[in-house]
Image 1: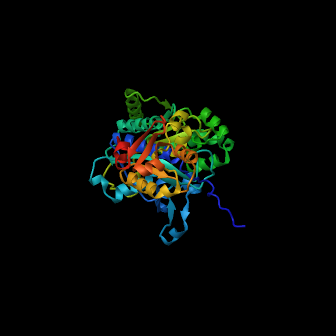
Image 2 (image 1 turned 90 degrees about the vertical axis):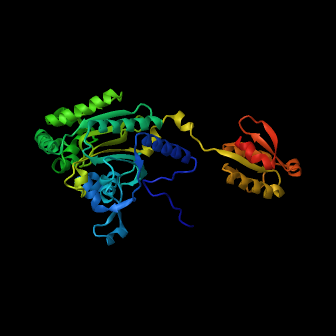
Length: 424
């Protein structure tokens, strides 16, 4: 007996019945992003592995546990890896294509597959899809841009049918602040180190911020008792105040979450996360933040003061969090289903089918003979708006019977007029 193959663990097939939901989501995402002045960019799904190691940080779980390397990439100097997130590739492209010399602020968005070798769970796969948005440019460290990003993320989620998304924000301060806060955290947590989980004991030395990001309840309770707020410099606190005031001024509700730090090394100043119901304990549907130092880290002009802000939303997680009414409102449809009552009528039905398609009308037919009942059943299953029926009388008179599937009303139309009648 031949072996049956299954979809690789941590991946999924997106079947035809689900495609209309994906198409509607992608179309709405593009429309909303463009309304904020963002333009689409597409980068390769794999990059030099060192790009991710340098941008995400050697201490991040993504680099240490989740990068999916390509065997053929061994021929390259450092190797190749499938992209685990989109930001690093966007910054690489921004630098390589000298976008800073073409515009003062590059506002970019992307949709595509990402890959991480992690343990699959609800809404978290090894191949997953994201909507990502990035704004990069000289002197663009501005609280209003941060607020715009978060407003855009919330706008997208609401437009895509996610009910009651909750925005949580925090500030990590400047690069200098982060170094001071890391030392402060180690001092505060030192006597409790042995009470942390095994992963957090390792993070304590490598990246103490990740201790605050732990999802285990024992660590969360401990850090909540020991760490109330991160100590920011006066300048960083003023910046965070500006971000909060800007959000409030445009009516975007938020909660300050002192333990929100995000898991990637490149974040500074504003970080945020958006949660939604229906996703279980891993309830984040999207997240992002500011990463001003990353352009320099990846080879940008040292003489230019770059600012950068971005976020990513998980498409699979959005689909899980969509309300049922929104999901039901999106379904595939067909303009016309052509029905030949006898096998000898199929050549004429096939000719009409192609005429409809070439006129911009979506159409299909059954390529195997069947009763009127069975073919009408296929038309219903295809969610066709009209059934175009070729019977004995229609063939004699060079006409068709055109049936409106929603009202069951039927009329006779000359075959030469069928395209204009359907379009009208």
